[in-house]
Amino acid sequence: MLPYAAYLRVYEPVTAFPEPERTLWTAYADSRRRPRRIHALGAEHREAALRLAAFPPEPVPGRESRNAYVRRSADTIYVCPWETRLRSWLAFDRFRATLPAGVSEAFVPSEVADQVEQEFERWKATGRSLQPHILSSTWHVPLAWFVAFGQTERCLLLGEPAGDERKSTTCFGENPGRGPATAAVTRTLIYVTAMAEARRRVTAALRIVRDTLGEGTGETTVLAAGQVDALGRWLGGFHPGALVELDYGGLVHLLDDRTLRADESVAEVGVALEAMERGEAELAVAMYKRLLARWRPVRALESAN
Image 1 (cartoon, rainbow, N blue to C red):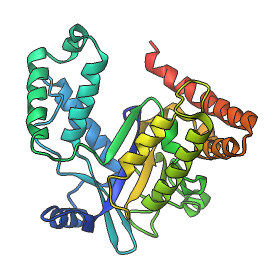
Image 2 (image 1 turned 180 degrees about the vertical axis):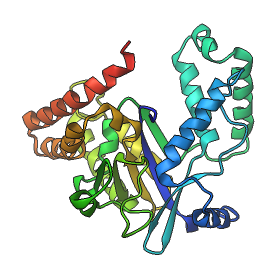
Image 3 (image 1 turned 90 degrees about the vertical axis):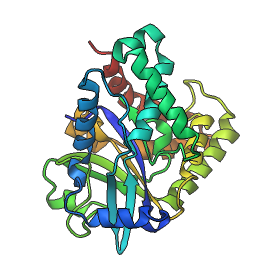
Image 4 (image 1 turned 180 degrees about the horizontal axis):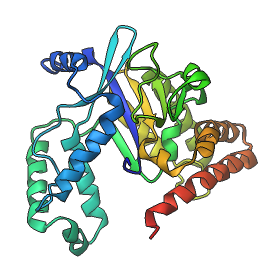
């Protein structure tokens, strides 16, 4: 069972990486020993579980991961480094910021947390980028993430892919002609698009939201300008020839097959934005209510006993 989290990933062309990373990732992509994509999420989860189950717990690994997600399209290799150490640092910072000190110490002793913080500060002093190739969201998919994709870019697999399901796949595969590259063995929902398309859609959405709603973040708005702007700035930090992937990850275990087939969140966000641009407030609100009806029950499971 995978963590109940969704992921937004950027795969950059291997040529976008400086040496010696370019050579290392090229060799990695051809290695038979690397975790294959269908096992990658499980491998990440096992590593994290072993660290947190240790005594004392290890919230951040001692060194950066040497693994990555790999995609191929035509003759181009695309790489999305796991960056487990950087992502763990950022996540641990958010974790400590959202809980009182006494509560966070129940999960990680203060001396361990202080050591992690000191190591992160030394790492930041080196001037390396704090922008990971992977964003994650537990218990839901942020509405802003849907903006970057089109409904036709969906890849849905329920059980063993066969027949029409395989033929209808439009995502970039790791092995072209032999089905899609997925993050789960038999059940997954992903969207994949080109970076240029993702940026164009996000820019257009941000203009519509700002023109229509200003900087509002209330529950009555379909999207908050700040969330769309943050997504645009994150995408802007990568190579223009990259690929962008939305992976429902472990959330597929919270939705039955019928619900996954009927999931039109990307299309609904698109219709809502078009309605907002045309001044059709009722249609925009209707799409927002449909999105809430789908995702509120899933988010509510976070606090289920």
